[in-house]
Amino acid sequence: MNTIKLIIQRTLNGLDIDYTSEPINEREFEASGILYDERKEINQLDCSVVLSITNTAESKVYSYINNRVLDVSKRKGFYAIRLIVPRNVRIPHVYKVLQKIAQNYDQHLESNTINALNYDGILQELNANTQPLGMLLGNTIYKVTCYTFIDFAEQSDSVLNSFKLELFHKTYLLDEIDKDSESSLRDAGMKDFKAMYGHIKDITIENPESVLSGLWINDIRLDYSQIKTSTFKLACLSTDQIHYTSILNNNKKTLLSNNHLVLQRPQPAPRPTYKHRSSRGSSSSGPYWLALLALVVGVAGGYFGGQYFDFPYFKRTVLKPAEVLVQEPTHHFHLTINNSNSNAFLLETDTAASDTLNKYYFKYDPKQPTWRLVQKDKGANEKELTRTELNSLLKNDTGMVDLFIEELKRFSAISVKDSLPSGLPKVTRQSEKKSGTESTSYEKAASTTKNGVESKGAVNNKTTNTSPEA
Image (cartoon, rainbow, N blue to C red; front, side):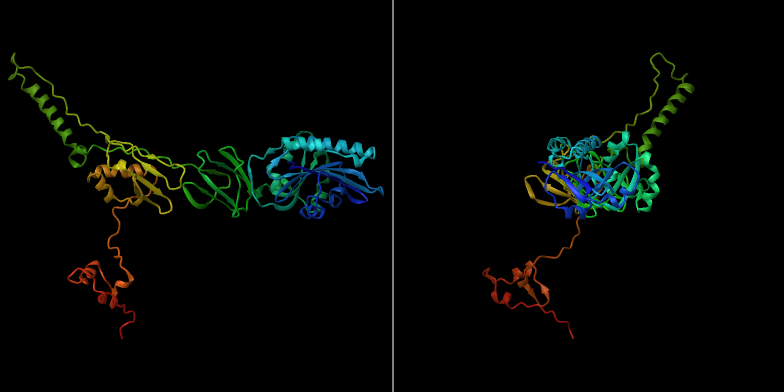
């Protein structure tokens, strides 16, 4: 399917269209700025060729404007070759393509064979060789006309495909040899393009682990399905509001930085190092003092009492200080993510530290946010994880409970509650209310008859008094 259109305008008897690659709606194209009467500004300049880029919500228009044309009355006019492409693609070597079309058109003008114009071969080649832009563009276009001067021979192709030009409605590119016309461009209300750089945000987005789940500009969602790299650019106006979501947090976040966004999973915190329980507390330095005292006594005895113990059957020994070892915990729970592609991921243990823990998933829910306990063989039966639950699973080993909670914090900093609040209201049926109070299960049991049959009168006569006392 051809996505590139070609239109050639010329001033002959007014402003005419000499060629279109397919039928067009002229009024619609004029309203959007795709078709434009260059006699209003550019035709007043003393220059031969001008290039331009025009942007609409859906299209980008490359234009080659020949400013040395006379109309039927020998008045100064122009012709414009306009290539219309989707906004998210680019044409490599586009300046050379425009020159090739212009040369062919000039030949038909000289031979008066305009009716024989045919560019199907060029358009077919262009459609086959277009390239994706390779970045995202904001959905807001600055309604301003700019100008800039470049070296046509060296810079035309690169500047015509610059993403910065695609954020402004129209930009004229003039050769540096025509710089004397700058004052006329300013008088026509155009802005120096280089002075407009401050209106652009050029943001680098790094998404190495594919956690980005949504991207919005001004509350309009962007389609980034064509982006094939983990690092890409987003260009928009400085006034645009950018929001994003990730698979780890489905709430929209505002991008505050104007140049960088890095998206990745939380990095596990370093494993904590604990002293062995036997070496904790204020008495942990005792063995050091005992070892030092033994060493002093041994040296003193050997020095001062050697004459009393200098017998053949006595063998001197040197006492070594007692060693106190500080060991890391021998248990690690080896938590791993069971379903890394979901917002609320599950952790499971891969350890022999506790056979009981292996029967459960530990679910992180960012919407709560809480850690929840899910029994593997009863997936629908889940409850909030508390220190009380862990004490029960780990047989009240507080050291193991502390270590397990620290390993959970490697994946999320959400704290684990000691226990759930008590005193929850009892569940009753509406029909069991009586005299402004709710019947408990004991009251209900008491309303039965001696034969174990519930007294219907006792239930049916219960009412609730909602009026205040006088």
